[in-house]
Length: 172
Image 1 (cartoon, helix red, strand yellow):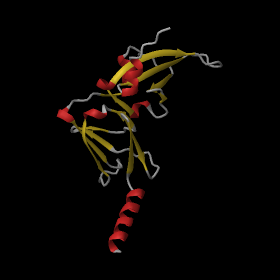
Image 2 (cartoon, one colour):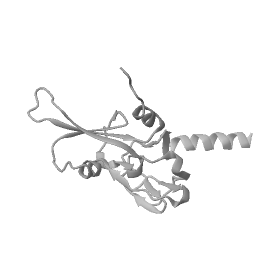
Image 3 (tube, one colour):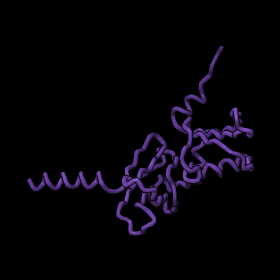
Image 4 (cartoon, one colour):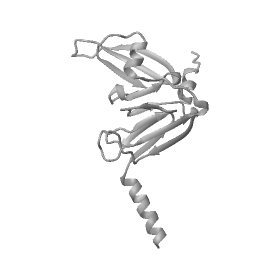
């Protein structure tokens, strides 16, 4: 009976505390269960990143992933430590960095799309490994009622689905 009560309290405590990580293919999304916008500290092969809400890495390059909920720094809700295979180096880029690297230095309004999903969070909190980018395309969007055109930046990552779609040959 004591063992059953211990297991139940452990499960219940785990549900109420900390973050939940929901990996979907190459996308790791971080949700803080208490509803606050308090992000965990992300450490990839010893390099620390702050204020990351979403990031994309090649899932095949991940050797191990550790989540530490009890972190004593009040600015962070925990630590996510990721160790990559063969100490692979990553170059994480924010969406505005990717925009600048592709020749768009303007400050015009822009819509970011990653893997066919509209980015609705702060684009500075969404990082993508430079080596995991399959393609980048820019476009313009004209919206009736707006004087200025909107720019679009679409980033596709090297997921199996995106590679398959990119290599598809259509014959008419």
